[in-house]
Length: 102
Image (tube, rainbow, N blue to C red; front, top):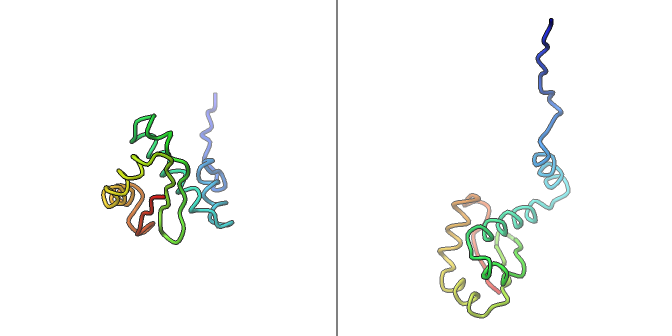
């Protein structure tokens, strides 16, 4: 009985690698990174607080987070450097240099 070992071909990619490749080609890498940030916030924050976050976007290396709740918005603004540092540690300091809370 012969057993063949299948080699992974060079063209076989994980689906996440394929999505990243398309994002790079078509220029929406920032949108994928914004989704990653939103996922991180979902894990980090309480469910009730996370529901107050309307959108997360990235423009010109600036993370823009829109928050419905005035209290949560104020908390994010007061701890802006803390959150920016968290995001830079998680995703890399070269990805963004500012955080805007709206």
